[in-house]
Image (tube, rainbow, N blue to C red; front, side, top):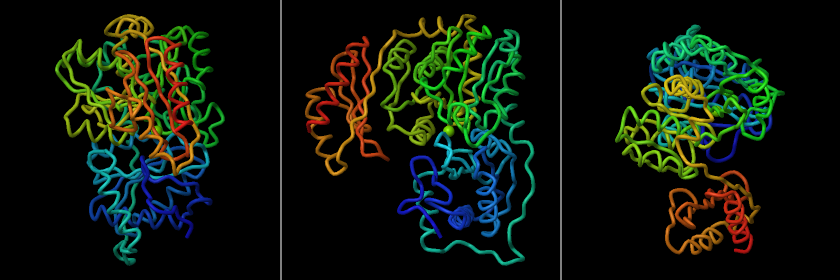
Length: 453
Ligand code: MG
């Protein structure tokens, strides 16, 4: 058996390269451990459009049934659709075969509880223990699980979103939207959702292809140029790019300006807080300071978490927050689903545009002041990371936050976040300030300090 070394679960489920860092014997044994952990009830299984998807799906369903679990098989679908259907259709849990935004060679699994949310770190460790102990259930021929199709995952998801936004108002506006699905799983849901919301939909890269030939599976302001061109060429009101499994969304306005997720996230927060003042918004330490300005105006509270969608989800649930968002395009709306969902984020942004009856560029400009960012990566010797971080911390003399890495407030409106990468021998330097020059200069200063430490 070819299996990943050490911990199986990373920051976002289990990920590996089939045939290189893990094989189908591994996938099957992992699924037997997951089935044993669930112990009872029916498990919903889905997958996105990766080249190894069908193979992995077969191994995962075989493993779950071998452990005695009954399963329901979804067609290909976005991760948030499977998560929402898990909850809405009353499953004991679900398993999604996906590697989200990772390059084409990767695949993996995400495990969700009955609420559609990724299981806790503790439960991940329970599954790892079953896996390593070899204590998974192996049902005999009379007791293996049953299987049946579950054809209504995407329909349930689309209906769920439509019931949580002001569909009638959005329909009346007849907005034009360009979708860049990145050859990923939202190809199967977002165009139909937006058509149901009365939008005129134009699609690019909206054919599922596990080679991700369009622009790769990760939406990023640097690779969404085709989207901005299509928005301008078609006089659209909005453009949206999704990641491979459809839980993240990056938007551009009618003029083709792209926004990071913390800018559109802050606009959505402003809109929701206007209706629900004194609520709580959750976002990682790396998001723009504009959310504090928005929250102050609305009498709301901001909770900063470590970087990572599971941290945001768990904090939203613990603190009964109104919403959460991430700079990389994650939007979390717990009245729908406390995990990120690109489809729900898009529908809600359309509701903001319909309600406030103004182009997105103007809505963003009106909601908060403009800040500039600078990002640098510094290669480091992994054995020196602790020493480097201690040296950086000493530079803070005053306002230092240590939620994740070291965040130093250089002045009232300038911060620098210095974080070692979890997966590569690099330290990331991320700065936000009121001018581009100051952001660049501050990032250079800290990058130099990381090198010198
Ligand atoms: Mg994803």
